[in-house]
Amino acid sequence: MEQMLSTLEKTALLKTTKLFASIPTDVLTQLADRVRELHFEAGQVIFSEGEANHGAYIVVEGLIEIRKGRALEGVRGPGVGFSELSLGEGEPHIFSAIATQPSHLLNLSNESLFDTMLDFPEVGVGMVRVLSQRVSEQAQLINDLEGQVAQLATALRASGVESPPYASGGNPPPES
Image (cartoon, rainbow, N blue to C red; front, side, top):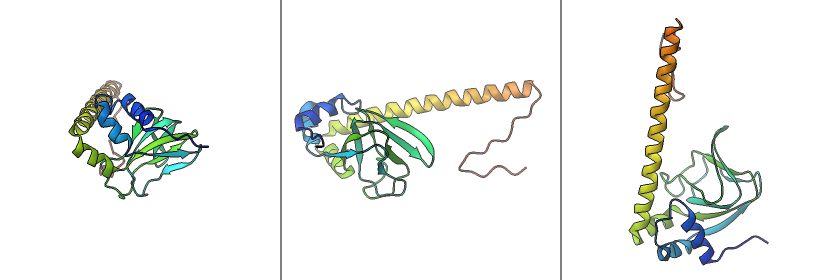
């Protein structure tokens, strides 16, 4: 039989996540009542690129791979969430999520999440803080990568090797 959590257990789980840790417990209890539980076997797809969005997920147990095509974007384990909040309910996913182990998830529709933010602004403030921290971390990673690329280009030039032209995956290579 699949494990079902009480409202108290869901509230406690939400409180342990980085996203909701600073939210008052009574507010999280309201949010816990809005989530639904889902269970997936290893190898089962939670959602695929192009399928309709059904909100945010938090891993209770198990391990989830997030993929873009064949590329692995990341892995989410217990207490970690994943979603595409930029998508409206029903809009197509740009990533896929696959259970790599038997997994127990909480799912909150975007509509319920946004309603919760309207009912309890502290949820929105908490999300803004966490997402801002993630943006800052990503900006630092980009800065570090740009520095490494500059060092490599300098080392190549010093060795008499011309560095190849840059072409991102989304843009055609420059004309030679």
